[in-house]
Length: 412
Image 1 (tube, rainbow, N blue to C red):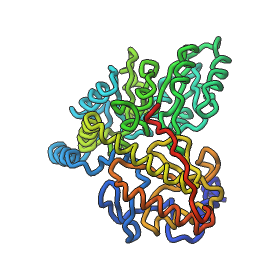
Image 2: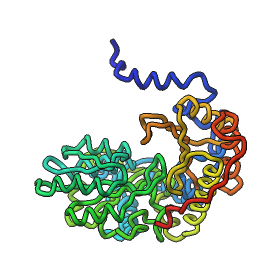
Image 3: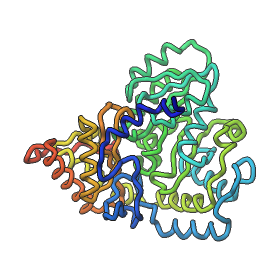
Image 4: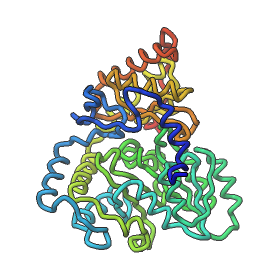
């Protein structure tokens, strides 16, 4: 008997991957050459699975600001935000984010995961109700578990089911908080936020939107799905991350509600975690400024997403329902998916492999994330390689069929 026996089901899944050249769960890059290229196992690969949506990880101004911060403020704060870990830059970044979203308040966390963990475990408690989309990110579920509110799930992106569940709670005491995401990370689909906001208004609930994958992607100013859908006034809390469009690490929550700042001494994941290093704060502020002023990045990003989504769909592969920077191909068998993923890496394209039960449809996914920094040539190379491998594995017919592209999510 071992303390690790409880993980036998995971070990069986891991072992079932077989003896492949590359293991998707233990990838270690030799080096990263740019926002779109790296070296893996001695092979140069296109990076098509990094969530680096605006390609800002190698932005020169951001690098310069980070270096300057290290040289003047050191490598870390060695303390939490409520101890010695609040420097001038931390407050400045919170003010920048609040201004960007048009809100009065902002809290910055050390990771995006902690932003969800901290907010959801703090703002609702015993006697309250947390109503989650069934396909919510792991950080949302973990935040729900850490707190003490009653958790209720509604069917994925189904406002009617949300309404039915809230209606049953109409006369039940306690606050009700709905949680949805802008772009869902597995399939790249977009929440029906206008309809969800309408339910929220009618039922007197609060609404939190996780814009992790939609900040910098959707909306005229890049504020995410709430902006694109025209419902910013209905969203009480916006949570996001720096590790996607802003090219660093960290998370945040912005809000307009009176009394928000009490969360700084009520939220345990905020209080008891070391704050972000000054270099991260500096590069993140630089990236936010670039996002705010350079709309061309979003335009190029959506053009690249449209090229990849349309190219894979034209091959006959099953992709997600919306065009977004997350472009996933669904397959039927995990073993085939592992072989496909290894062949992509061998052919010079790195992306993510997601296996059940971590996928919403219990089917394996080859998950790509597009960047504004990708060139049309790189996107086409990936499409061509998908087609070549798909035909070799017998997944695709000998000749691809052609179908009109779908409407991009930017039109929401």
